[in-house]
Length: 215
Image (spheres, rainbow, N blue to C red):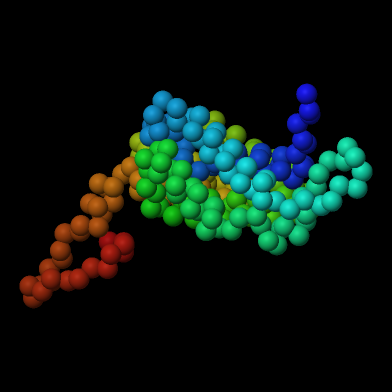
């Protein structure tokens, strides 16, 4: 019986980081919690992670192995030319979320997650990749402990993530954790905000209000 080929260390770290990033994705967490994909929603999330990891692993260029038994190493040049680009990752996420969870996400979160995955790939080929991945895992663990209430109250996912961003993924995590997940499940409240009552001045003229402005 032949032994399974060993995975490069970079792939293992990328897999860990991918799992953490998916745990930090409010829309996916809601989809699993509400079983948008049926009773197998949790298994579908795991399959999604596996699919993403496999896509990067099978396309990643490896350095030549000098000695038999050496662990394969991903070519560091792949940091500047990842195996997949943002659009390819986004298309894959859109397809899986639609096919498996019957979800057509229009909150911009797929673009953010796609960018985060590309950045993760670049970072695991840079200095101190383990520190970066462990920071993501800690953050994901904290979020999982608190749970996601965005499906039951607008702003739930955003309020839970405030002040929890790691130094290494600060900008990306703020963008991810601030994704407008409630938009997917709370469209009525959004529409009510947009349909504001007209304001009439003293002369009887109706004033035009800017959408999205504060009253």
